[in-house]
Image (tube, rainbow over all chains, first blue to last red; front, side, top):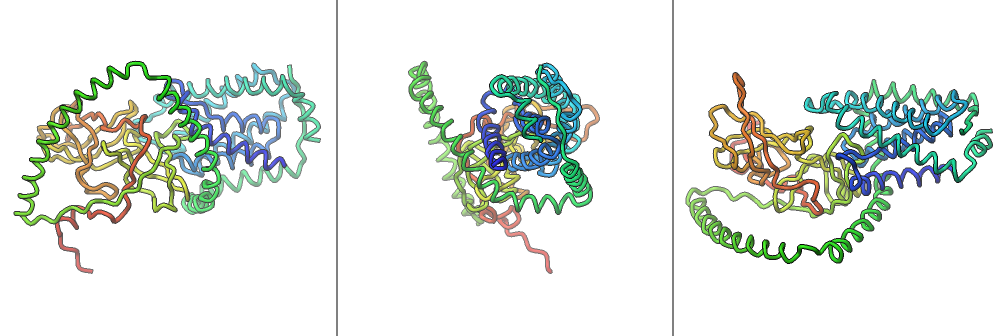
Length: 166
Length: 290
């Protein structure tokens, strides 16, 4: 059941990311819903789920992008795994902390990605930082915080997580 | 304040760690082989995902149609007048071009040039854009089952759009001409100087390696040279807007305004392989002995 749920989530994210988000991008940059989803799943589902969902989601997103499959899957998988590790260390998580955490992790991932992709010489680190990494990190953090706030205000998140992980 | 405090079983952690290590090792040691495996396995997976993707794209198109046909009709009368004026101008140009074409046919027949075969084209619809921010690509609703493969050229009647870089059984990813990672062989139509066209980070294109003695100037049209696979000779790419000549540089470069606005492309044509001869084959160049 949970696998089906994750597959549906991955399908929905890929569809929205490639069809709808380009029309609502800011300064030509769109948020990475896959990154947000993997972070939240890793945070609340643990490192194994974060890793596996990250791998599959990164791979599925790379099928509809020029990015190579291995770097996409590895980066998303690593993000899910790290989010899972972080989730185990955090006792109290407020939306503000989550937003800041997403901002920092998105920036770090954004700075690593150009090296993994071996982009054109025109797309140097300084260009990447100002035109893609920072705007995308801001959008990721806002969307992640909003999703977290929506879920936690409508569902008893901590109880669900505790029962589920038992 | 929300509280999250939980534990993961020891076995699950070990599995996760083992998977992570295996993946990193595989990525470092066998990047090419793993890429092929993932690409092969991903083809049917891409077919499954393409259905909701096409459904979402269909809903989006319907909404866009309703908006453009019923809501956004302000200024249509003015547009209509403008288009009629342009049509008159184009009809006049068309007549002149017909005359030129007829003259070219006569001259070509005289010189016994082999005619360039018309390429076989497959029409496809744009259903999405790149899922990330690092590349400028479009997603087509046709894939390997329709004969599409990597490195095939993609055009519209106006000119070159880009090149296919990835396919699944029912979709294809096209790297746009304006992406800095793309490179297409081009030719300045007036001066016949050749160069390489690549995208820029500003969303336009740049023709590089123009000889220093070239008389290229703003307003010159650039077309495909046909020297590299994917595109036949003579497809419109763009118009030169600026020439950059640096001191002590070996070549000039030029900024191009692409003929096709990649942000507004909705339908495209894909050029199938081996449907047109290379310049060597077209001109009957002798083949090397094996």
